[in-house]
Image (cartoon, helix red, strand yellow):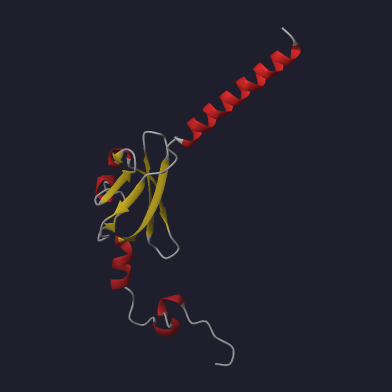
Length: 136
């Protein structure tokens, strides 16, 4: 066999392998599931059962359909305002992972609002002590 025939055979094999690779890549599922939430009327309490946080949360995938059984709570974190952000994750059969978050009001934050002292208008808090302000 001459070298021209070997080179032509290698080039033909490369073209065939490239075509197969492109076909496999194009037909691959790369779409993440969609996580949906129903109305958010749950108030977060420290140590509450995670199943309560999962109420009204669902996940669907364009190829797999309902993938809500893969839903899990990835993280629970506090905000500076005193709310709680719960981050959910779901996965489809192609291992595409979606994440979504929603904000819950904290139970102790509601009781704080109800129990604020009435004298705290314009920073007048007798418990904090009187701090003189220049010009007063």
